[in-house]
Image (cartoon, rainbow, N blue to C red; front, side):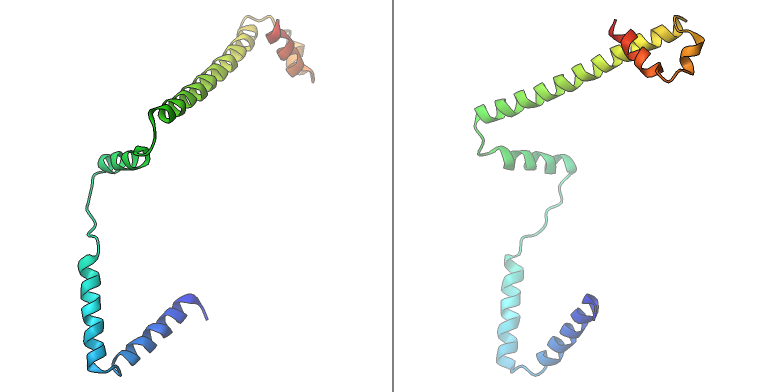
Length: 125
């Protein structure tokens, strides 16, 4: 029996038993449902920016300034390291591309199995 079938059977059973309840129980259940619905929070529609702002405010209320500064320093450090790594990688590719474009490379090097090793050794010089 799959889940939807089980839910359907439970709903049928509860609906069937609902009609057999005494009127006093039925009215108490109705009153309890009305109280529960009255206490239910109404969903307020907010814009996306308001939602993001409330998320940030809720999660930063208990934080101290020192914790925020440490987190900010960590973000700046990780971003700087990623930028530095990308810059270094671009510089290595630039040297290799320059060697290829300057025609310092013999034609046989393109078919040689050690071409990658030659590129790495020429890039390190």
